[in-house]
Length: 320
Image (cartoon, rainbow, N blue to C red; front, side, top):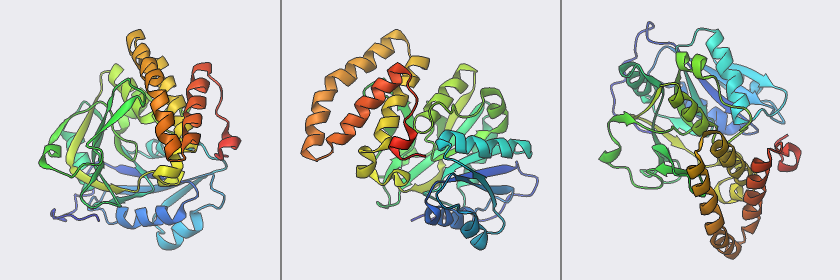
């Protein structure tokens, strides 16, 4: 559970204006629970926006009934993590945001989390975006991750601190390669220069792509251990096991190929291709024992479609 021993003193109204974007897709209960914690933030200059991303039933009525101060935007169709958040970020920039905080709707927010992110960003003028500690909601004191690395192996990325007990080694601040999309504080100036998420990714690895684009333009990404949130892992895709056999595996595989084609050198692309070929038989055997071989098929299709630049089969994947 989220807990904080920090001084609850709120910053003044002249603090940088932050717009928080919470994306909802068919999980209104998660969104309302997230808002319950987000609206307890000790950061005063906070504006909260919910983007209903083409849900079967819009979350507008439920959100406004419990949180009338929240703005709700609605999309007629599922624009994906990329497009849905872009919709909210454009709206925020048009209204004078200094920072935009993108949050998954399956997160629970520590009251001091936002203030810590803003403090870090203000100390590092070259920071395009800032992230912090992310804990698992189902395992108190266990991290989901802190920041990410690009490995150029079968899964493209690695999550630093994944599924380990929290420890002082995750304190402090330092530059990182990329920040997980469940909690990213973007500097408005960086969004205007780098652009928003690439909507070709739809969902998964768009945060890694954005970080690479920012780095190429001379921006930095920073981590601060003072910011803490809890995260329900893969809630939007049905949980860890179910999501492996569904659209998450397809999109992660497809988008890792897109990333490699756009940002990888020939050596890095070759490394990734070799890792996929070498590990594929072992993946198949391991997943077959668990009855999850359908997830390997989804990965194979994703890699193939990424290489062929095929469009995402939205209806078949249940995404629209």
